[in-house]
Amino acid sequence: MAGKPYSGTADDYSRYGGASTQVAHFGMDELQTSKPASFGVQDDASEAAAPWWNPRRWSLRAKLIAGAVIVVAIIGAIVGAVEGTKANRYPDYSRLDYRLLDTYAGPTFLDKFNYFSDKDPTNGFVQYVDRITAGKLNLTYATESSVILRVDTSTEAASTGRRSVRLESKNFYDTGLFIFDIVHTPYGCGTWPALWLSDTYNWPLNGEIDVVEANNGGTEGNAVTLHTTPGCNMKAKRKQTGHALYQQCDNSTHGNAGCGVQAPPASYGPEFNDNGGGVYALELRAAGIRAWFFPRGSIPNDVSDNIPDPSTWGTALADFPNTNCDIASHFRNQSIIANIDLCGQLGAQPQFYTHLYNCPGTCSSFVARNPGKLTEAYWEFKSFKVYQAQ
Image (cartoon, rainbow, N blue to C red; front, top):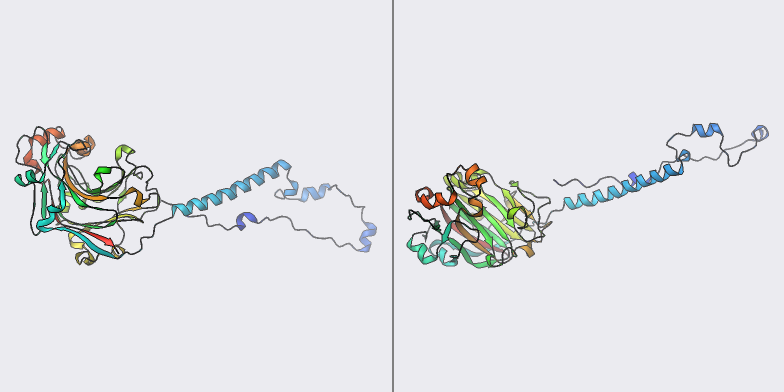
């Protein structure tokens, strides 16, 4: 945590407590009986009476050492004060007046997205399909109340990868307040789902924000994570309820782990779904990036009334201030993306697939041969709403 700035005063180092000087008063009798004055020579009694801390007794070497110590102490105090002030910097998250810009909901939800159908860039055991194929396999469909994105469970042996979907919004955003109303999150051995923002055509140049991301059983909860180019870190004062993971957001460090914040178990997976889901809110602005999670029974009225005011929501789940990260230069042209990857660079990692979730065999063989174990691998969204500050 950030240290407190130095609170001492300048007098701590600028005042010097030397011996007081007095002018002696001599009477006539004293002049007659006193010894002649000895100039330039100090008698033994006077020298012995001077205390050790009196600089008059110090050698030149001692005086130089003392002076050096004082200079170092002053420099240390100044540096400490400066570093303390830097460590306590925090951006101005003053209230913004948000107005609704885009709504993704109902039967037209899917019309506002492109279906990504190229090879998975994260090497998943998956075949992303286009909209026509997704419709035929019932992998995506929208009703008045919600929209579903699911993994194919109709193919018994998916030897070259199981079919799934990845949607990317046609609209792009540089800033905004994003409200994601989620009913069901995907989980199951081999799954790696995510709801995220990025410019996939210019990655990692324009950054990536993982709003909701988990893998396999999903019982560890959600992780909100940033991925950037060099020059963005979270070694700064933060106000959040989640547990900070890596502080370096640079995608070239820690195997592209990014700078994540871990939420509690109820934020994702079986527990989240059993509770009726909830709302994730993400604020992207020059001052920083913040995310909140509201369980279904605790959604603020201003969110339900389409007049969201983050200044009233309390401490965020995840806080990524601009202290050591220029948000505007690292995050631009963001598309909303929702997908369910299978295995891949995260889902198939032994530390998760095998050791944490005790999934059987290898990830690809399990996904290929067990469609019946993937019935919970689906997203259900009520709506996405995007607000812009006025």
